[in-house]
Image 1 (cartoon, rainbow, N blue to C red):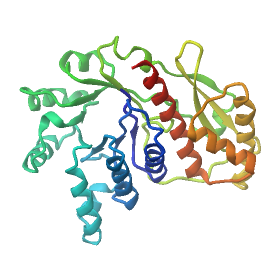
Image 2: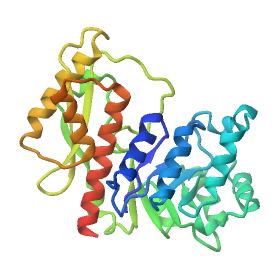
Image 3: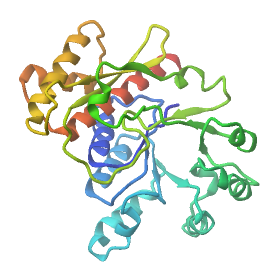
Image 4: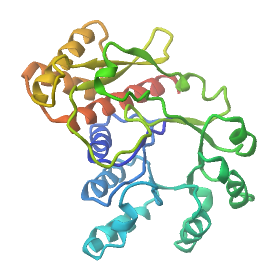
Length: 310
């Protein structure tokens, strides 16, 4: 089972919605959202998963962004009410990140009549392993996302999901030029390592930045299967990178490289198909849509693989 972990930016939510609405998600994929803000796009995404009868996990105590503040904003009371209603749906899996406030936050979930055994929990900080053991001494959560480290494996033994950031972040987009590198083999070996699933931050990475910026270069990050079925990632980077002008032209430069490469690496995913359609039509959808499509490609590709082998 694959649990792509996304931070709930606009383009990430749209990627998840389009995958499930187009029936491209795969039967063995459950997205995990750490929402950074309370938005209509978040509500629509949860609704899409409910309508398509697909499970999706939502973290009730995100550690980044303004989501918790938004929930208390009187101006957003209507959308907040809709969110609370959606949380009651059994297809929306409640998730919790262990932190210094976990005891009170888990108590609040209990008051709201959410059972601990139905939760997904994320424990990726050694300081909270003992608290995890204390909170789940009599029953295990449905899923426990943990790093692949012995200190976690020794104490967290049930329903373990391997959580790891696979994206090798570079300082500048130009630094990705010509790089073709290993991405992940967790889909091959997670069961051998006594995990019931695996999770990553797709082609975005764990590093969170609230605000974007105009890049000097446009980079497309595309994953693909090697001959041994391990996952690799190839980066396609624009050439005219002296300043921030003409992002559409930079996109076309990078996309031309991807189009040439795809001629010998045919992959049937909706995200890649739509990306290459922009090359054919010579259109520029914007940087957010570009990121959305490459995320869609990654998640669908893993879903295809798991549907074949599981």
